[in-house]
Length: 130
Length: 130
DNA sequence: GTAGCAGTACGAAGATATTCGTACAACTTG
DNA sequence: CAAGTTGTACGAATATCTTCGTACTGCTAC
Image (cartoon, rainbow over all chains, first blue to last red; front, top):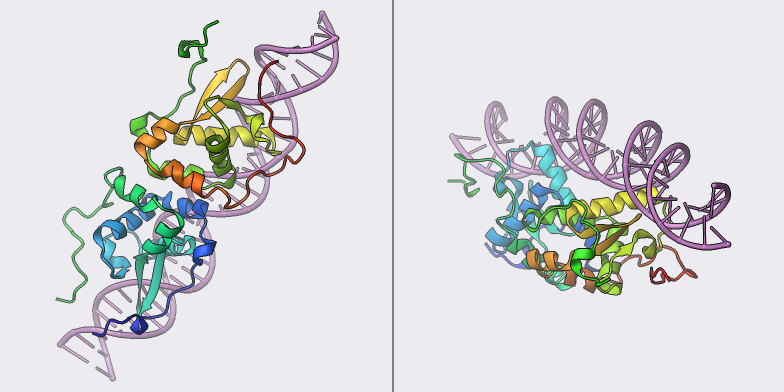
């Protein structure tokens, strides 16, 4: 598994660093589900991209696609086309560079609202194939 | 009279510090006009409450009332009933206490979008009652 | 007392965002 | 190769937010 950067699938269209606007980012993060995505990506993921099934939401798939797209278009996450599935990753560097303190803010308010929407006996297990 | 704190008009209903939610604050700040209000209050005002005419927006009055109410209900500003007019003030302490770094974020992105919508020859003068 | 001013309350129209069902495409497994 | 799985694309209904016009209130000035 030569995990070099050049081996990765292309990046889906997204705003450049210069185009990032604080209002748009905040608008994206105003939704509880999307805030949960960003927080989970920030706290529980390392450097790997995660498919949208990794988050353990029980919403319809179409809704999830919509929200992830909103996050990408606001500049909060990267999205790559890993073959069939589209994996997401927080734009940590860009956000820290453009809006220093924002990610700390998200991390520090972790226990604020709802963490996992609903999956009491259905823990989000790793997408590993057995 | 002595201008003590007890002399001031009552505070309009607002969420307590414990009730402040980051998502709600970000939702309020997602609007350009409301972001401008918060930024202007943060950078150009001292400790005084300002009437909504101080900001120099040329929108209809009803719209301004709506936006200021949204800011208050999200917990971004205080509002007091100074006689006839309703003056606004940033909840600096509460926001810094609850979401440290947020105000710095707003201040640092000052030159991002639009600053003053329109008031070239109508500088905001102090609301002093002569 | 009368006229003028500034701002809020209320209601409705319009735009926008969210939610979801269904159909389709590509990979994986046996 | 056939079946199953996962996720996206598209479209429509719903809910919500935004915007604005109008009417009303209370103070100020002369």
